[in-house]
Image (cartoon, rainbow, N blue to C red; front, top):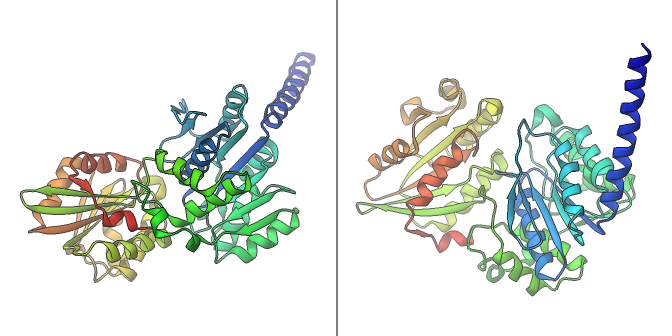
Length: 399
């Protein structure tokens, strides 16, 4: 019994010492930026870090996007190795790693989903000086709650107490402002329309004006001139899940591959589709490729509902790839979708998917890929990327 008590006391002392050591590491970094939101966190993290580096501020960043990365003060990337499933304790180790290199600023993408873990990430791990919230969308409802109000309150757990925050969110700004006032946080709404089309043309991938405006506001707050910050952002490497459009030519047939898998909630996905229609002049035969993960089955059903409501007359075929596709296929009639227009490809190789698309295209076609990059989705994207003839100039305008 005495031995157990001794072990318990020793553990408590160890935890206290570790916590105090972590606080010293954190506060040794003058500028700490916490990025949260439903969509665009990885992009904003990369854009902010690139803009600050261009402005001469020694900056490190950590993303938890498609592939977790630490981005050092020179813009070089280091993979985050995870021997087990993702755990927010990872953030402590990353902060310590960064602090040892004595950066002036760190930009951390929030990796927590559960509300209590988001609160811990901010109020125990990072203590940010600037908080960024990209947007709040109806996603991760099991973890954060069934309504957009639940999700907004959850995401607001990373607002810095007594600090300053920026957001591109418009619909739920009223609730975010209410949550910010409770903790003495100054929350500012950013207007993406102030980012010009000319400024957006500088990116070699499809970036969102919301993300760029949020990053520019942060850089301006920290004294980096707009032109300097933008030049740094143009040179930065996007997340592998970033929205891109590839043009593939095979035997005089042209396929536009729209990589929208990272925007895996219905609102973001349909917004990308609307912009795609505006900027690709001839869509041709439209195929929607829905790539699913077993642990995101509810998200697949949400996207089916979106297709049935908003794209029913705008697509010719629906390809199902990934996990639990048989269940997704069986659910199609429930959402008014014709199973005769659908093809269950499950775990088909990217090459097989490629040829299935080609068989259905006489001259021009568009493959609109949505769902998840996980469970093999990224392999499909990579296959089409390797066969591209060019990134569509028009596609750069999809913001």
